[in-house]
Structure formats: structure tokens, C-alpha cells
Image 1 (cartoon, one colour):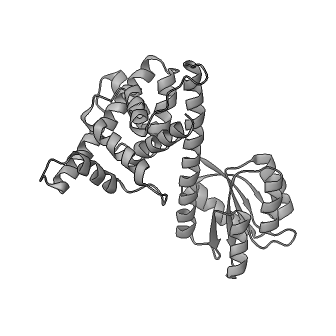
Image 2: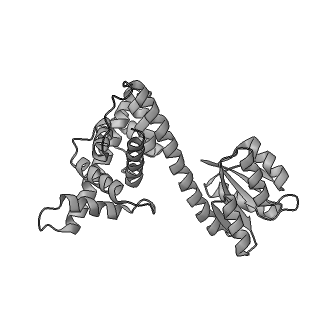
Amino acid sequence: MLSFCIVDDDAVSRRMLQTIIEKGGVGEVIGMAAGGVEGKRLVLDENPDVVLIDLLMPDQDGIETIARLKQEGYEGKYVMISQIENKAMISKAYQAGIEFYIQKPINRVEVKAVLGKVSEQWRMARYLKEIKQSIAKLDDLSPEPAGARKKHDAKEIIRMILMDMGIIGESGSHDIIEMIDQLIERHQGGGFPPLKVLYEVGARASKPEGGDMEKEGKAVEQRVRRTVIAALSNLASIGLTDYSHPKFEHYAPLYFDFEDVRLKMREIDEKCPQEKRKVNIKKFLQVLYLETLDKMKNQ
């Protein structure tokens, strides 16, 4: 759950933002301040994930406060709040390092939408950090002499990851390898593509001559879903046997939502099928894509 600090000289705005964040399940407000100087001290003391900060405050404006926080080493995210509509001022705020800008008067729907985007960015940044840390741990388990390591291409790396999760023999593993390999080869920024686009990539790679692309795309989707569920089951089984197993510690929290892992472990332990849940396929593929890129970069 994200932690927030709110820095705004308007007490009503502070209370409204706190209510939207906490009642809406966005995160937890761990501190509030009525000015820039007080806000700077608060943020450095509490180190929140996100700072919601007013642009205009009597003692020290939001842009100056952000600059001073950066000088002090704070690395969280900033969201600016203000009734100012001056484009030059808003541009200056973005240059200072804010992620988004919320216009006053405060609108509940807008705030939740903006903070949802901030939350998604934070999660992806956390995934990348955890991936790098976990890769370092796994590398330490099987060190190789300097210069002896062979460089692998994307497909080899993806195969090794899928093999680690025990799903390389699943029919959908071939689709996943082709999808991620093509994404790495052709994708030039712009965010992670929709699942439908990835399934079409898989369909083109596996479609029999003269086959139905739409039908094959649906078949790819089913194969990939079954394979991801198999990975979840394998990791949950490992976790039940040894919660500190390196493969479980690395893959389970990165590739799957905690609640899905927990329920699958309970289902296996109690030998009783739980209510069917939708596994987060997109998260699995996104993290696989990021981890593959990271391994290629650090070979």
C-alpha cells in the first residue's frame, strides 16, 4: 500500500485528499503539513512514497519545496495540486519533477484516477528494483568465473526463466517465448501493449498455413492462461514445502498478486478447490519482459 504526505495550506483540501486516499483504498496518509517549510521536514522524516503538494503556499511554494527535497535526497513521487491554470507555471512544475497535476477545486474522480496512475508507476518501479535484487541473489547461488559466462539471447533467457518455474513443457510456453521475444525485438517504447496484441503476435508465430487468425489468437490466449496458472501452482507447491526457497522468494511475489499465491497455497494444502479467480496474465508477461531485458543488459 502506498504511503502519502499532503502539503497544503488549505485545511479543507488536506482533509478531502486524506478522505479520498484512505476511504478509496488508494493508500495511507502518514502525515500532513500546512506549509512548504513544515512539509519539507515532514517528508524527510516520514519518507512517503508520494507527496501531494500545493503549488502556492505563503511561506515556500511547492516548486521550491520540491527542489529542496531533491537536494536533501528524497526520491519519492510528487503530485502537484493547484487552482492555477497558467501553462507556464504548470510547465515549470513538471520541469521540477512532478508526475501529475491535479486542478483545484478537488474532484474525487480525478484524484482517484491520477493516484491510480501514480500507483501503477510505483509498482512497476518496485518490480524492477526487486527483479534486480533477486537476480543478484540468484547469481550469488551459482557464481561463475569472471569471463566464463556465455551471453544468451532473449529466447534462451525466457526459456531458463520458464524452466525455473517448471512450465517449459507446457504448450503455452512456446507462445510466451515467441510473444516476449517479438516484443523485445520490435517494441520501441510507448508502454506495454494490450494482451490482445500479444496474442495476435503468438497467433502469427503458430498459425498453420491458411489457418484462422482470430481462432488461433483465442487458442493462444487459452494456452498462455493455462501455462501461467501452472506456474502459479508450481510456485505455490514450492512455497508450501519451503517458504524460503530461492525460486519461491524470487518468482512468486514478482510474477503474481500476493492474494492469488496465498489462495493457491491454501487450495493445495487443504486439497480443496477454491473459488475460481482471474490470474493477472498481463502482470506475469510484463515482469517476464522486464526481467528478460534486465538479464540481457547485465550479462
